[in-house]
Length: 225
Ligand SMILES: *[C@@H]1O[C@H](CO)[C@@H](O)[C@H](O)[C@H]1NC(C)=O
Ligand SMILES: *[C@@H]1O[C@H](CO)[C@@H](O)[C@H](O)[C@H]1NC(C)=O
Ligand SMILES: *[C@@H]1O[C@H](CO)[C@@H](O)[C@H](O)[C@H]1NC(C)=O
Ligand SMILES: *[C@@H]1O[C@H](CO)[C@@H](O)[C@H](O)[C@H]1NC(C)=O
Image (tube, rainbow, N blue to C red; front, side, top):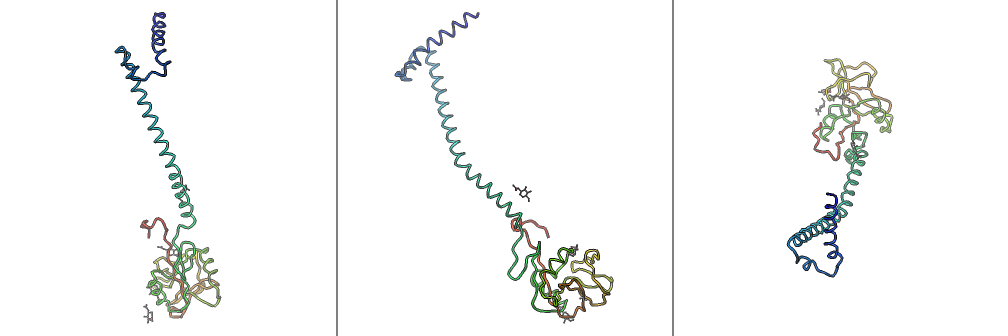
């Protein structure tokens, strides 16, 4: 058994030896011979053809990858940059004369008005009278106010029926967040000044602060409101 196998191997190598060692002979010449030989050669030719095609295909795909990769890389870079800028400046700019403050744009008026007229003034500017969320925001707004003698109406007034301070968004004042000193009466409206939040008769003339929420620049479609 073992000898036979070795013998078979030797005959194959002996037969194919002179053929492969003669580089001057063309494949067409080689293809003429015994039938089994021809068949083997055809098979070999097909293999070589397939190999050449595979190499061409691989080369083309490598070239196209090399051409594509810088573009893909740069698009990733752009996306990362966008992400970074999104994080640093994801909110819309404020209009001229409006000051950015965290997630709001604020308008500090020059003119004075009654509280009720101030309320409608802000709504004509597609905004509302100022709502103060917390002590931090209060401090930041007080820093924006230059003149200690000026009062600015905010969106907070006293409701006699409920005997409570009420924001114009309908929420009652949380005295843990903002405390207004003094006993309010009918027609009391709140203002902010450099020194804090206080109140006055609603038909006093004061300046006013309007606020507008800043929208995210990229995800404008987001229906949060
Ligand atoms: C992009 O921003 C989102 C949201 O801020 C964050 O979760 C994500 O990790 C950021 N991706 C990169 C690549 O910085
Ligand atoms: C505000 O009140 C005054 C006095 O009552 C009134 O003349 C004026 O029309 C009111 N303004 C608005 C916008 O309701
Ligand atoms: C109304 O505004 C106040 C002050 O900014 C805030 O504390 C409260 O949560 C708001 N209420 C609603 C319903 O948005
Ligand atoms: C207080 O504000 C509410 C709106 O939140 C308004 O309807 C009401 O007229 C105001 N009160 C006064 C005295 O201006």
